[in-house]
Length: 401
Image 1 (cartoon, rainbow, N blue to C red):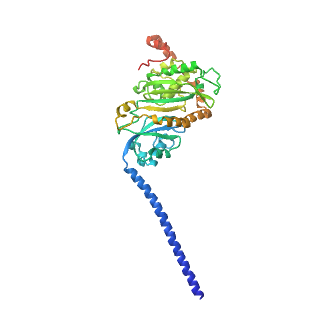
Image 2 (spheres, rainbow, N blue to C red):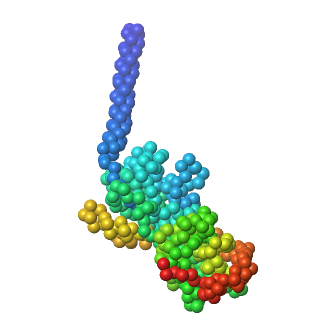
Image 3 (cartoon, one colour):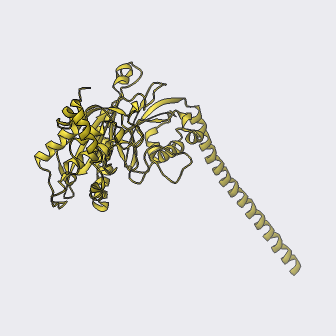
């Protein structure tokens, strides 16, 4: 009897264990099936993306450049993070480009309109590339970008379009605290300083001297005095009305030119500041466009912003051909303005207040040698009537070009 009872219990236990194993197997298979289905969905989506034709487009980008080593990607150098590192990663993750195109950007015909320097921001950068035009493309790219980098617009362009080569001009702004223009002999309290009308007019007269074509070899480290590419055409340059933010008065300088060399704008502004503060004579502007080497100070990168890029010739030829839109961003202007107020201006203002980049840079101006070739100039002036005539001008060159 006892033996029969033991046998029955053993048989029941065996059945229960067997049922449990079946349930477990079913659960595992169900989970596995769900996982396989999820993987299959992802693969289907990827396959669907692969079937999409690649199209040449431009993206309108805005970004705060603080903490980045410029716009241009340095493949193989993860030590210096750039804006394009984050952009390419987002393009791959969103499914716009295959991974191997991210590793070799030439495969997607990638080109940026302007190679912004370390710490420089942009409100209207343009990049051209070939992508798969997936659904909700802008939203998906932005989902994989940090909030201080945004894609604000997209347009189809011609197959041979190159954002760098097709760009007619670029407009930059430079936001700086107005105490930068206080004379060196003036005792300045930064938060109390306000720019007077006469000084603003002088600043604008000096900035206006840059208009036209000049040899800017002294405004970059990359060009020699006889390098034809050192000649650049400036269309306009002026300083706007001052305004107060966080108890400090700021002003914005706008400059539009065909193209700019590395550090050129920062040095153009740096030289005007040195003149207005009384460290350098106005005649140094003429000298800086000549062949001699002139010590030109470079203003901090913090306040520099790529505002807009211009494609007038492209727009005239293709903007109304029925297939392509003109590369103008009127509908995106509000989004650009919001981004600047949210990310660019606060970064400039707060960084200036915390790190005092302009105030610290101003302390370095006395170490520059602004009169290194003064003796040579005086000798040349005695022997050359033309040089004498130039020296008697107000420091502006011939800006008739």
